[in-house]
Length: 435
Image (cartoon, rainbow, N blue to C red):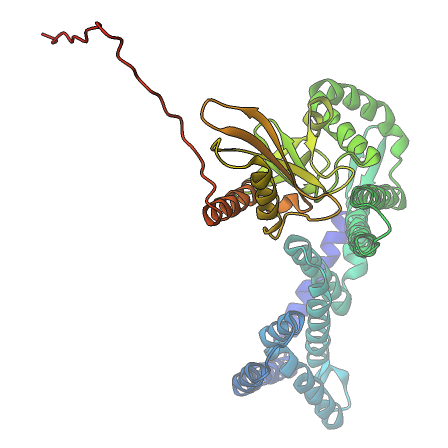
């Protein structure tokens, strides 16, 4: 490793001394002039490009993002053709490559960096994109200047001990690069699979979530093991260690494992699926998404509750839309004794039917007498709706308003409790003043 590092330093020293030659200084001056020209061209071109983009109405977002990428690298785009033009001119003027070798290196580096900059924009993760950027730029730079083999030998000679075996730094870097490529591919395949699965109307929502989660675990797990095996790391030695870690995690993460298993059970038995309206204790809302550890429930007031999967398995859950979307609601009211109950029942049913969300068929509203109260005849009005996600309190309020308007139009009175107080002859009413 020491000899390799010494050789690299020696080559770097020779290269630095070569930069002081007159021909090299001329090439450096040409590069500086080309950079100034590229900057001038960028400042002249950029405002026109921005004006052209503003003139386009309804341009897709992905085109805007690529326009920003091009705009940020406009100087490099201008510099590359100028550099190759300068190389062509120098080749015509001089027969010896030493007169223009620096220009060739600079032109190749600028082109490679530009290609890497555009290629890595396909990576959406910012951290991963930066790592790939710097790694690709470093390797391409070493490749162009001719130091790649020496650096590779130095990295291969630097080894790290892992028990009875050793692994070189070069193997680690290869593994990381391969893992990055495999994870990018797994991410792309996962997104493609998710899009296709979600567009399949024949599958239930819970089965779609299960397929997507299983695909993610399978692809990322395969990417990890393939990457490790490709580098040469023996994974059989990790069996005992993983078993011991698994036992410890099993005791420490009982609730987590319970929630994971409960989530799989929920997906398999289809008792709860995205879009269902449920009640769990004081929480009433609809299922927004099914996670590996919890279920997201959104209430009518906009709050989002993350309910552990175990609670949905072990607790009593009211699923308003399990087998179908029909939900029956009851309303209690009373009218005066002098009002005809047959007429009251008919008017109550017509009032309920006048509300848009109340179903008229196949489950029409009904009204029944449930008792004779102290001051009123008591009724129950039952009606059905098919969209519980739209709320229950609001539709009850609309039906109450419809009853009020109908009873008022037909002179049906809604009594309130009244009491008669009679004084028995000979009794006396006295009050004692408080001191």
